[in-house]
Length: 304
Image (cartoon, rainbow, N blue to C red; front, side):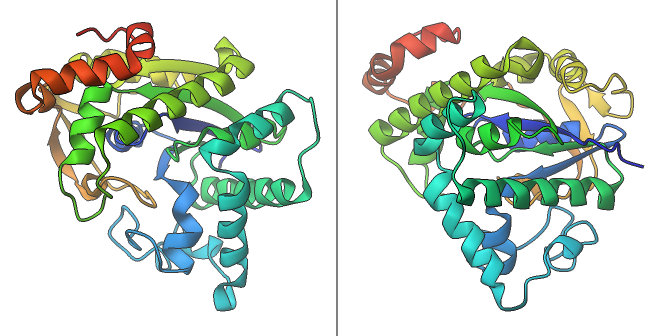
């Protein structure tokens, strides 16, 4: 049975940071369930307007045993309202007011309280339906994380996952059916904003509830990094995670809402250490990317 107060490992950072893969590896721990980008649940499942209506288990979200009980909304009225409120109050640009509320400097508006209650109810429901006391939410939204972190009925811990911005730029420049193409300048501005916002929330939570890691460190030493994350999340037993080798892991079924299409992969999955940007990004492009966000890159240990 899940604990009365569910633990939530909230993964934040810039999109394309490797959160789907890391979350699915953590999903293999006993008592853990990775739900992917829960932020898009109402849009994907009920409004049928997202990038994918499938659960990570392969079934439609409305038919999944974990999600179906959370998605009773005849006519979609509730989903439309909650999605609209998220766009009005829970985007990265809204981190400052949500942070002020987390710090106790102001009271949240009624709409944010409504959202907070709906999200918390969803997380508790998933914990109950899956029997997992640890819910891994990789929504990657600092404002969203701040709202959840102030709730006394949830034990929220923030995992800030950082990835080299040159890898992020390369990913967004490559055509993908499921991902809007973005210019390098726009991607770098987002990368900086998302990471600064994540640090601001994490700094408020303190060391016990905030951990920052680089995705590249995970790919180089996956066992050690997963063990570190598990301890941070309050779980010591990672023995069920089947690392088939130092460079691969065996993944089972997950219940992710959305994310990289690789979330649907099961079986043995390679852990790649190579970065395509090192082969495809021009020297001027590397220099421009570095110059654009150099202070943050150096802070996170990335060099030219």
